[in-house]
Image (cartoon, rainbow, N blue to C red):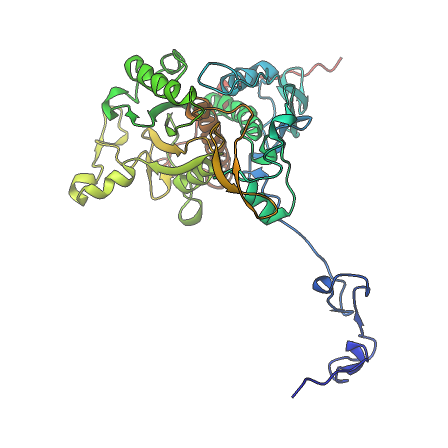
Length: 441
């Protein structure tokens, strides 16, 4: 039996008990698509609030990045930075130069100086405590290189999923999914690094430990003593010269035929204060994992012994405690990677991030067009044959942003009142921060 129909409005057909006097319904106009029409009661004003921007990282030290590969520029806005921190564009430029394209034959040939400009949040070389706006213009765009990508999806790229989600996308350079988005992260990370160093002497270093099948042995690098100069001594960013050359050779081999390979970046953080991180949902390793897996092309994260820890028994894997000569609680081994129970224990934090081969390659591939036809695609454009040498400074930056945010959270919660000095110790010393005498003339 067919359902009864009526030409009466929905409100008129509802029982009177559903519609108290003066509480009729309001509907979308008839011209609106059927999928968007719905009715709401007049009891209270409807409020639609969307919180899905996904462009802000951090809770206390917040960084919002913006911009696209072939737009006018990219950058970030940093909120929550402490005041009176010495900061100039040169501080950020050092890190941006390590990330920029065109720095060697094994990176993308796109030529960008990535020169940054601080537009707000500083006065006479000091942070003011207000939002810091950093801008980097795009200067070497070649939109014509992406005409094929406007019609077909690059395999393993974000082209298809952006269409699935938004129904529209910026074709040139991948738009927001381009690694140029990470410029804002590196600029903010440079500031976070500086504050961590001033406050607690924290050092963060990342290096390439694997390229394709070339694996740097675990004992080839001493995490206690390795220096930035060793890492930056070659274009592979591997602190061991012998393995660095093997990595360069592996990248060159695929580069000349238009293919790509992946690899692993290892990151270490020294002098991280004890007590950073929180139990359960905000564990330090969980925050690091989220930060690293938000990076373009990242596919895996492990901290400490990682997946290899499953090969041990408990008695083999446990890090036994001991008292050192200075009276500090230490661990004899560090399979935990400097984090236990989601909280830093004062040992070196170390983790690894896996990056897949660059998705855009100069070889013909089978794919699907935007109008859902099976096609072949041969892409043009300028792309890294292996992302890991340029990923190392980005990994450092994200680690710095996590540690900075967690440090501020710890100080806000656990150092508001006097510490239990039998068990706790204060974080760093603010005495290393230069005094700021404003010019009142």
